[in-house]
Image (cartoon, rainbow, N blue to C red):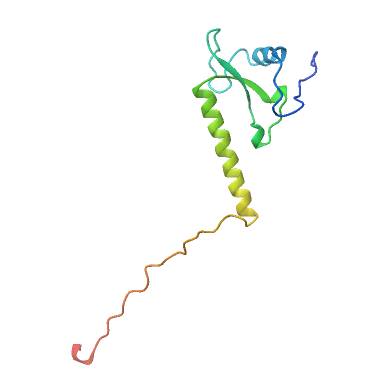
Length: 121
């Protein structure tokens, strides 16, 4: 049982308090949740949503994890955005509001038939 109640942000952009950052860091043994590398004192790190807010995640302590700043964080954000875009495309297709192509499909047509005349027999 938790001795401290879980922190839940009042809004999606609420700043994570320093005491909660420490709890998150310690809960993950000071490791980046993306790379698994130990975060050293000289490393820049940030708090990241494991399930992005745009993909249905919540702004609460149980959904937050430390991540190294720079490349790991950029890659995670790019994956989250790609997942959101794919979900939006699939939903639009399902609802039949996906934009139709402005150019119609063009076939190559039929092959011209060669006539066999009476002289060719």
